[in-house]
Length: 413
Image 1 (cartoon, one colour):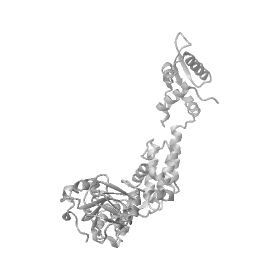
Image 2: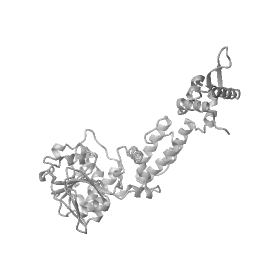
Image 3: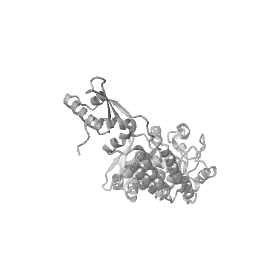
Image 4: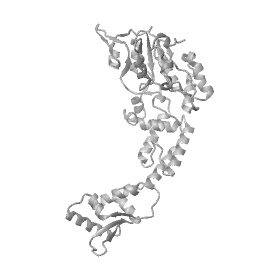
């Protein structure tokens, strides 16, 4: 079978743009100016235009198209009309699927997933599916779930359910999690934005891979401040004087120990804003500042090689996920890790707990390593409110009065 002609392909493109994505049926036939259609199709030679006219006349005789001709010069075509009854023919000619069929297929997929029991979050899962069914039935999509792409929808729902149906060990590498889910190692990374949008839709609040305990596979530590790597052969590499450095996991593993003239170590959860603000304020370089969430192998290596007497404080969010990161940092090192400025604060409006928050809080309140900060954690549970938990909203002037001097950091009790 010969492929459709250029002008018919252009007619299909214009029809699909105007009508192909609609679910509701239309009551008017689709009409285009013939001369404009031929021009849009790029047919400039007289013989090509004559061929197109003969093809259109043949399709008219077959009952697929209706041609409107010049009143007197009947050989001139003025308009071409695709009758409503011929829309199915045009769609099938280009192997298309109607919007109504896509909608129905997606509704069937959501119904299938709604019948599956979610092991950890059955209420949230049922609510997600109900919301998708209602939106799809009305012809709407809910990012990242789009009814026009049923295959993608099915894949996204399947991965989302698998990802949230198990408790991931904090610090699990995203690529390892991807493999454990039966995907290729980079699948979750490629679709991270869409997956995190799906998590937010499921839990009703911003939820990241980090919130589930997953960390990126970056093989480096990003830091600011005086630092020197010492190697077994007696050589060393001094980073003092540089404003910001990335040290690879390989170099951290290769060195025998790390020295620093800093008085303390401050790890910061937020890399994009808070870390940079504190770097800029560290004029006296009295502090070694680094950024981390759940401790990666590279960050664990840093903690192991730094002097054990170097005080370590952590500045993180004060939602359950933020406190879990502090717990994992304390588990990763024998030195004490203090909580810097991690105080519960009321938000302008109440931020209710999700089921995931409650699961984390249950783990936190039973940990013997969080006794000094337990009042702050219990405040979340007692008030049923995460509060103003993001560290970026803490005013620098109040929390960092002396450029990371000793009075600016509390001792861990």
